[in-house]
Amino acid sequence: MEKYYNNLLKNITELIEKGLLTSKDLSKEAEEALKFRIEILVNKLNLVSREEFEVQKKLTNKLKNDLIKLKKRKKKITKAKKS
Image: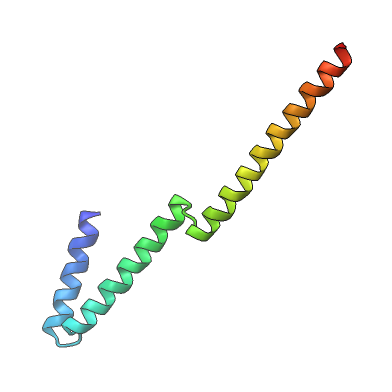
């Protein structure tokens, strides 16, 4: 990886020396590269938006409450059968 960065820096330096690349261009390229890397990282982490998280949270709470209700019904039915 270090070799890659050394070659990259060498190529950038040559372009700047030849006047083919300005600091403005370099800044823009660095920003785009950083955005691309962040996007890759976010995708690897399987991150979700806050909105998606809230939807999943509501769904999970609803399922939890439904499960609690079903367990209570099961207890009532079991008690009724034993009586």
